[in-house]
Image 1 (cartoon, rainbow, N blue to C red):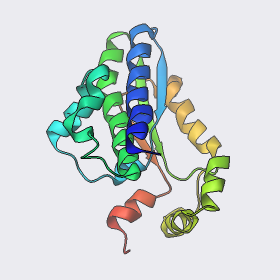
Image 2: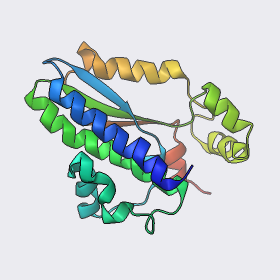
Image 3: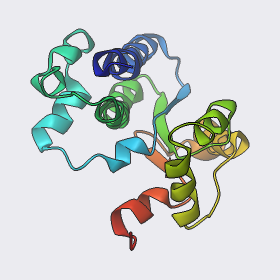
Length: 182
């Protein structure tokens, strides 16, 4: 998929949903955005880039210089930027949603055994996925029920003190990526 399409769907689309829901969310409401461990693999951005991804008005977001086709040429980079942007926008939106008495958070899952992940494991990137799983602390992929349990916490009565947060749940894959031996 072309990088521009990934940015439009994964970054702009999420920003638009956050904006529109944030305009109507009821007091006591809560939402969870599914981001990705991929956003945690992106090298550090500048403070200005973080603020731009978090705060640029939705309709101007894709015009940011850092998101132009000459800057984002790789689909993986587009996905990583989108998912990092999702977590940053949720943090910023939490401030706005909080004024309405509502909360919003992100979950950044790693490899979760869904039909899509099973297809990926059997596809051209399968070896890389298996290496990620094997080198992780958990030595396994996650389940949809595990993601659901975190979402239930974040959206339920036990999570009312949590907003604007991003929960990385990848079995230690990202820790291995940044700090492991390989």
